[in-house]
Image 1 (cartoon, one colour):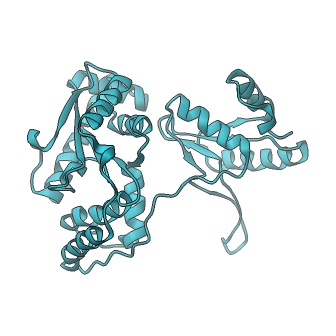
Image 2 (cartoon, rainbow, N blue to C red):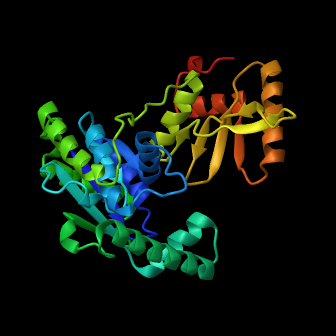
Image 3 (tube, rainbow, N blue to C red):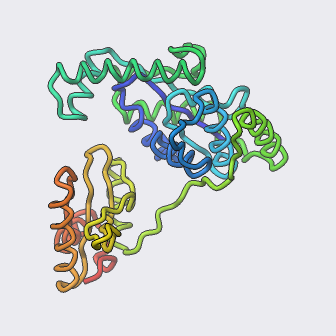
Length: 319
């Protein structure tokens, strides 16, 4: 199994770089949000008492090692480079940039003025150092914890992703096979011993889930997003839109896609008019009940234009 970790200073857009690197390498991508969800699936909700910070490294490694026994991974999680000591098929990437560049990124990504962006970046830096200290007993990463340090002020995301691919090829990462069952079991046993000190037992439930699209147009749209390297999540959240007198949910609406970089949901509509009318009612209710949710609707005509523009088979989009 091969593992590439990508971390960096706040405001360096390391999440986007990790996704680009995974796409170019053909590896599975694990984002920070995905890892959080996997930890909940593996260990349950933290509840009123949060998980012990000192247990987090063993928790994360227990999940990630199991995933990496089935697929090569690019892990876009801060401090992930410390989770696999002595592992041979590991490439550890760090991204840095000047404060002015990172402030500019925060301004663009969050639609803030410079003062607000500077304040947000400072808070993120403080939080990142605090969390690293709680989990690993040091606030700042050591330079020798990384195999390659990239300056986001000198290179754009595409170039940096290419450099990561070149480094992975130079290290011949893909030539490493997946972890043998005996070695995986030994590693898991060691992690279970660490977690036992905190009364925690891995459930072996967490796994990377492939998107199973319910309509061909959704797969076409996902491929288009991948082509333009736009991060997406498929049906990540359902919004209740009707309740009974007791407060039980009677009806909910699940948008097809969420684009985290734009904080926008996308709904595709390629059905006959009677069903479009029903869906439009749900979207109207969603906008009324959740005015802060940004949702964009693509109708059949919009999808057909995209299909024709990008040379995809029109037959894949139903009337």
